[in-house]
Amino acid sequence: MANEAVLWIQKSPPIPYTVADATGIEKGTHLKLGDPRTASQTSGTDDLVAGFAATEKIASNGQTKLGVYVDGWFKVIASGTVTVGDPLGFAGIDGQNYVYSNRLVANNSGLRTVGTAEESAVDEETFIMQLNPTVIAQFVAA
Image (cartoon, rainbow, N blue to C red; front, side, top):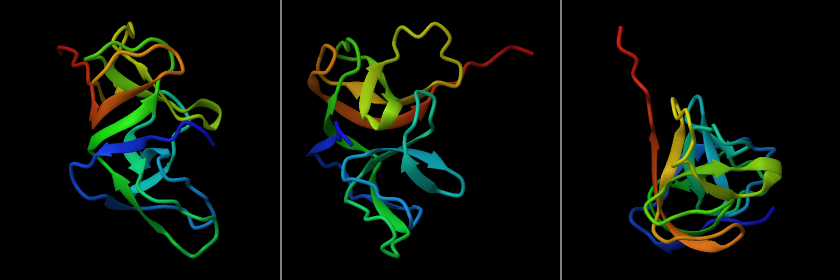
């Protein structure tokens, strides 16, 4: 796996999430949230955001809990152009840990936002982001 998030400034300690024993997860992996309170590697652009893996999880080692950073500042890799202040999303396609700007997404109903760009970047460039998972909801008048 490539492009793991690297902790730059820690805001709070990692929060424990349930993980599958048979699954290996590298430190810094972008994680999506499942029910009940389960984290696994992100696989697309519309995943619910859990955060970033704080430590490595070795496959089939009997461990079913993993610390997950849910806030803080991280060095990440851009997919496409990112401008300072942009809301960011996961682009975890093919096991790659990228983040992209979702500022220009035409229909952002239900869009998952992982945080905010603290710097501008171009495709494949490292930049600082603030991790602050949210869901942008579009409300429709009844």
